Structure formats: structure tokens, C-alpha cells
Length: 378
Image (cartoon, rainbow, N blue to C red; front, side):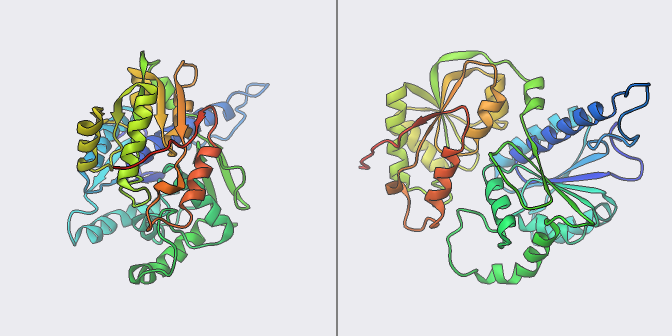
């Protein structure tokens, strides 16, 4: 049994579907253990200042709802190893391994869900997670970052809207959406604070306000900085890839030319691929631009913190323009973000896409802003 696991089952169940979500659960647990130690420090007179219950991270079991994508699975396995090294129990679920897999996964997790006092989730938009929320009796719910989507989640919760990812095209819900609507509505109600339920959002994103009752706590990547680095810094620049083409937001030819222009202007030679980038696109970036494609085996925050990493990191609007400055605080690395030109967007891009991407760039702290490059696709 894990040294931090309880004898009657986990006090806290965390559900993750991506490496970044798992990283942020580790950051949440680390931050809460530190906070508990501060709250429990002896008060004048020798008595503990806080209660006698264990730290909120105690009894944490991480449940990996494994996707099918090989790159994501590989990174998740590496992150799961790091979680075990920290003393946490990890339960790997082949949640998408065939037609019967969801029923087996939910059936196997139901007893744990009913006993858990706290549920931590990395993706409140996930239908899997929303379904699991209908089973739990937990009084404490925590949402950790799933990248920039967290900003949209908080905004939608505040407006009382249905939970839908920002890059999804606007318009009427499809048949599957309508079928799942009761579950999604139930999840939204459960994620709304009440007398019986507390809701916390643990985030490194620039969320200035939250719905009434939602507790915002800051993720400053203290676990990452304590465990890795400081990195060796090279003289050149590195490029960070994005899945905006794969999600249908940005035209592939425009993206290719934008990367070419940025690489040439800043002397970048390495391209850190996003785990969802297609092999075909990466092949074009290597053969047509001459970039060295790096497929990280861990989230970029850990890769950058371990090093070697370029003195300048170039990125389009994405989560890393918020997280990398935090992970690399105290180093000489500079993060630069290049705006997305509206002309690069596809016809099928969501009407909200440009505004959301501009917001991601505009709210980033401690980064250098670069104007959108002018490209002429061949």
C-alpha cells in the first residue's frame, strides 16, 4: 500500500486523462501539503494552529483514464512513475479499450467514488469525468488545470452555460450532445458550490474572478521547481508546437509558413512537438523547414526545467505561455508568444476562436509579445 494511502480507501480520488493534468494534480497535492504544514505549525503556547486531520494530499489515489493515442499514453506512463515515486497510488484504467471498457471502468470505480471525500479532476469538459461525477458523494470537488480550457470552464460556470470546449464550432448541439445533456447538466450543478459542496479551482491561468463560492488557488509550479533543474541554457531559440491545426482552428499551410518565418527570424532549430500533432505535419516541418523535431516524453514544463533549453522559447497562444514562465522563474530563459493572425483561421473555426486566442496571449505574464508574422502560403 502507498505510504500516503488510507486503510479504508482513498480520501481523495483524482481523475486524469493527459500528462499535464497529472502534473497539475501533483502540483495541487504538493501545494496543499505545504499549506497544511503551515496551518499546523505550533501556535504560541505550543498547540497546533490547525486541526489534527491529515494533509489534504493524504490518501490520494490517481486514476488514469487512459486514452488510445500512443504519444499521450507514453507521457502518462512516465508521469505515473513520477507520481509513484512521490508515494501516491496510481490506478491505470484502460478506459477506452473497447466497447465494454467504459462499463467495466465505471463499475470498478463506483465503490471508490462513493467512499471518496474529495474528487480532483483535470478536465471538467470530459464526458467520462462528468459521468463519474453523477456517482460520487464527495463534498469537496477540485478542478486542476487542463491548460487554457480552465479559463473557459470558469467563465461558462459563472454564466450558467452548458460546458463546451472553446474550439468546438458554435451552433446547435449534435445528437450525441443532446443524448448526454442530462449528465452534462448534472455535472454543471455539482460543480456549482452549495451548502453541501465546496469547489476549488487550482490554476496557473490568469483567472481574475470566479463564480460565487468557487475558491481559486494558485499553481506556481513549486513541485516542478523543487524536483527539477535549474536547467542548462543554450544560446539558441526553441519553438513550441501547437495542436491548433489538428483541432481545426488554424489552416495547416498558414501554420507551416508562420513556423518557417519565426524559425528564420529567431534562429530556432528545435521544434518541441505537441503530443497531438500529426505525423504528416511534423514530417513537413522537418523536411521543408529543416527543424529538428523533438517528441517530449514528459510535459514541456518538466522538459524545460530539466534542460537543456534555449535562451528564448517561441510559442503561439497556448497553455505554455502561462506555465513556462512560472516553471522557469529565476532562470534567464525568455518566453515569447506570437499572435495568431485572423487570416490563418479555417472556415470551420469556432466564432469564439480569435477572441479566445487573443485573450490567452493578452493575459500572459512575464512574456515577450511578438506581432503575428505575415505569411504567404505556397
